[in-house]
Image 1: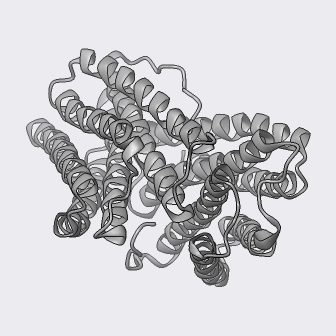
Image 2: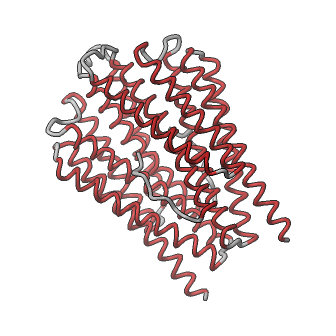
Image 3: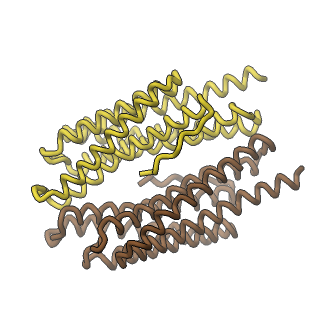
Length: 219
Length: 219
């Protein structure tokens, strides 16, 4: 019985890793579609999000079955509840990658981001992708060094996000209103993606150390 | 034992209702602060959000204790897991009310929304408040008529949200870039708030009927 239980817990962990991998891939492709105005790739990201949603529901059902049939306690229980929450954050990260792809598709054949902000957005996207990759690694290895790196990346994403709004407020800003909207929404999507990444990393840290870190003010 | 368990389940339900009430109040005040440029009221909403966050964590701890100590099954288990998820959505709704208040505070003494869109935003805010009120009622009475009304309100919010983006894209739009950003973010906050409301309503419906409604594509 115990052995079956451990196998089931392991399966939940594996499924989380799989979702994190798909989220990483989604953000990689969404960013590619976004920066090159590739509408087919954008469409691919949008379609692939259904798979993430499916896996999340599957993981949740599995976790609830374990709760019902095994009545786990202590750290096993925390792990299952943690998995339910992490899957929700990962699913949301998948949605945000989809939103980035949807912006790319909506503006095709134009590019979403004006030339002056391309560098900023490229850095933000790279950091988001690094966060997603490290999250996958963190879920797999529980190496908390990765959680620290995720936090640093997120701090930099927040700076970049703030700089986008500063650029829009400057007298030099001369983009059209729809572009202004796209830029602000895109920046927010990248910022939220990083923020959810931090939230998952904090949950893993909690599972490993048993200590909850002080909550950062939610963005 | 069974009696204690039922009392604990009841307590979780009561706490969800309390959070929903605080969220309703937060959006009422946030909207008041937003439409009248009342920075003190905005500050009050921002400060009060900590209470919602505290209650959410308290509810989650309580729910996990019940899982650990009582090992609930079947509908009781679904209820507990549902409560964990609903509390996360309600907490997020509180964050969004806070974001609306933060916009009001940031632009003070100016108003966030240009004259031409005031009617649209007033209707959106009213619908959000109606959704939050009905959600509180739904959690209390489980009257599924309220869930249907919440869905209709959300559909209207989505229309209004789309109309804001249409207005920004029109040649008549002459607001500054920072105002354009504020308008688009505010519209998105109201839209997300309604969307989370629907998500909670769907979970209550599931707990009552045992049937999961088809997922709407996440906004």
